[in-house]
Length: 113
Length: 117
Image 1: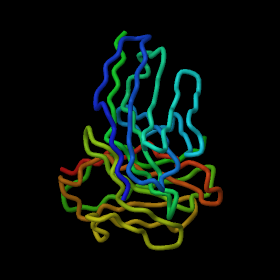
Image 2: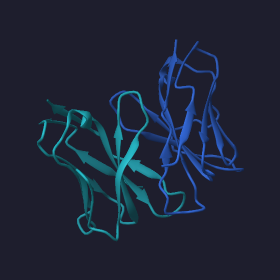
Image 3: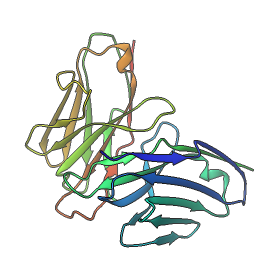
């Protein structure tokens, strides 16, 4: 089955700096890569996603890059703000079957004011 | 985006009792719902996948007789934790997806914090 590795597990940045979270996946059949933000005691919220036919996608301060050959994908947050503090999960979705979502271990991001 | 409502958000029950958690898709038909369990400071682990009108598919290591899943309609799935024990205390999260449009994402509920005492 699919295996998603994510690092770092914790990340502290100063407000205004950039944050980068990296993930790798194992199953070349995966073709959809969402990123989720989870605040304490809440369910995950989709913040950005990318499909395997695209190399990069940007939405305001958030961008995601995908290297299919290397099976790497990354989340970039620029101009970080305290409200960006949360746990971020990357995920890979297998294109067959019921499109099971395999999550990374999560990255706890702390933005220091 | 679409809305998935999960109820209750928190529940405390006595050891040995059963607890039912509901997951509703409010503005779309959820042909498939997924149930996850998340322990503190850990990732979401898929427990089972349920399709409307058919039996759920459980992940390896998940007891189907302990975690009963029902998906009787396109807008509602329930997870019943039977004979709950303290080790079942966890954060349970559902997500829902419509395969009527396979390019749509799965939407997550807000989670249910179960504490078994």
